Image (cartoon, rainbow, N blue to C red):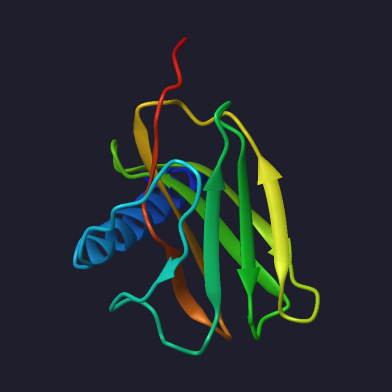
Length: 136
């Protein structure tokens, strides 16, 4: 009996994400505030000049900015590094090589990283950003 297409697709995506997370573990840890992180170069990056920046606000909203991309369409993952899982993934269209996206729902006390992939730029990742809880 052949597994369903949905199950095979889930296994493929899970395998890609685990491989991506394993390759990101080779980079040196970065210290960053919950306010901003700039892009870092890792062994997974192809070094074509694309950069990725992740900012997290005090409420769990985030802003992702990409610049100098060659591709017109880029696949984005927001990864909870603390739990080794992608919390969001989507595609963005670039305009003259740049894009900005906004979303929310990140949980405090966790560390996040943005990762992108496009055929023209390869893998690009931001530094890790620790989202500190501002309890008052």
